[in-house]
Amino acid sequence: MFKKILIANRGEIALRIVRACRELGIKTLAVYSEADEQSLHVQLADEAICIGGPQAMDSYLKADQIISAAEIANVDAIHPGYGFLSENAKFAEQCETCKIKFIGPRSSTIRMMGDKAVARETVKSYKVPVIPGSDGTVANATQGLKVANQIGFPVIIKAVSGGGGRGMRVAHNAVAFSKEFDSARMEAEKAFGDGSLYVEKYIESPRHIEFQLLADSRGNVIHLGERDCSVQRRHQKVVEEAPSPFLTPDLRKKMGRATIKAAESCGYENAGTVEYLVDKHGDFYFIEMNTRIQVEHGVTEEVTGIDLIKEQILIAAGEPLKYSQKDIQINRHSIEVRVCAEDPANNFAPSPGEIGLYYAPGGHGVRIDSHAYGGYKISPYYDSMISKVITYGKTREIAIDRMIRALSEYLIRGIKTNIGFNKAILQDPTFRNGDATTSYIEEFMSRTPTEVFTNEEVK
Ligand code: MV4
Image: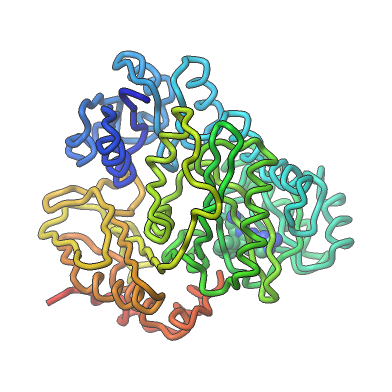
C-alpha cells in the first residue's frame, strides 16, 4: 500500500481525500497556492508545500512544480481530484515516467476519452448506443452540412475537446448551419486551441444521466448505478440525485451493461463516469466519459455505502475489487445540492469575501462536505462552490424534505449564497414530481420571481 499521497487539488475535494487517506493510514502531502495557506486541507494534511501564486496557472496547474514537490517529499502517488490536472493526459504521463502512481486511469485512456469524437467511435465499436452523427470529425462546413442533411435537422455541432458547453452550437436548418459551424470552430479554437468539430442529431430537452463505474487493474468492471444531473444552469450542475426518478429497472439494467462495455472499450482502470442523454421515449445515448472522480460522487457513496475515494486508492495500489455486480444493492435515495458563494439576484455573480458567522446543518441523514468555516476567506481565484450538502433517506421524498430542512439550518454571513435558490427548486412541484429535464432551470427561472430565492437569511 502507498505510504504517502500528494493531493494535487484544493477545497472540499482535497479535504475529502485527506479524510480517506487518514482512514487508510496513508500520510498526505498538500500542495497549495499562496491564496490557500489558511485552507482546511492544508491544516489537516500531514505535510504541506506552497507551490506558487493564487492563479491556478501559477500553482494547481503547474505540473512540473507538483512533480518536484512529489519527488522532494518522496510520495508514492498523486490524487488529482477533479478539475485542474485531473484529466490532463500529459500530466498522467509525466507521473508514469517519474514512477509516481497517478490515481486515475492510464494516460492513454485519458487521451482517448478526452477527444469526444474518438470516445464516441471507441464506445460505438463496443455496441454502446451513440447519437446519430458524423463518423469522427468533419473537415469543414460543407462536409458538416452533408452529414446534417443525412441525419436531419436540428443538429448540434460539438468540439472534440469540448467541455462546459463551449464550442457547441445548435443548427435548426441548412441556412443557419455554416454560420453556427464557424462560430463553434472559432470558440473551440480560442477555448481549447483545437477547432476540430463533429456533428450529432440534436435531442430536445433530454435528461442527463450518468453511471458511476469502478474498474480494477485486472480487468474487473462494475457499475454503481446512476446519478440524475438534469438540473443544470449554464452547464453547471445544481442538484444531483441517485437513483434517477426517471429510470425503470429495465432501462437501468441496459444502461449499466452499456457502461461496463464503455469501460472495456478503452481498457479503463480506476473510478470513472459514463454520461448519457436520455430522451422522452427512454432511449439513451452515450455522450462522453469522465475519467476522474466527480463533484457529485457522494450521492453514489450514500446509496451504495461504498467509499469511492478509498476504492480509487486501493485500485491504484493494484488491489482487486472486493465487490462483484451482484453485491451492489441500492435501496436508499440521496440528493446533493452545491452551495456556492454567488448572488442569484445578480445573475449568479461570484460573491467572494470573508465568511463571518458560520453554522452548517447536520442531524440524521445529512452529510456536509466542505472546507469552509467561520472566518474563512473565499478566494476570487477559484470555483465558487463552498459546500456540498448531501441528504439521504429511504425514499426520494424523505431525502428532498431532509434537504429543505438542512438548507434552512445554514447560517452563512458576510457573503451571498445560492441557498435560497436551491431551496426554491426543492420546493417546486415540477422537480418534486421527478419531471426535470435539462431545460428545467431555464423554465423555472422564467416563471419564478427573483425575490423567492434571494431572501435566504435564517432568523
Ligand atoms: C447534446 C444535447 C442535445 N443533443 N447533444 C451539453 C454539454 C455536453 N456535455 C453535451 N451537452 C449536450 N449535448 C445532443 N446530441 C444537449 C446537451 C445539453 C446538456 C446536456 C447535459 C446537461 C445539460 C445540458 C444543457 C444544454 C445542452
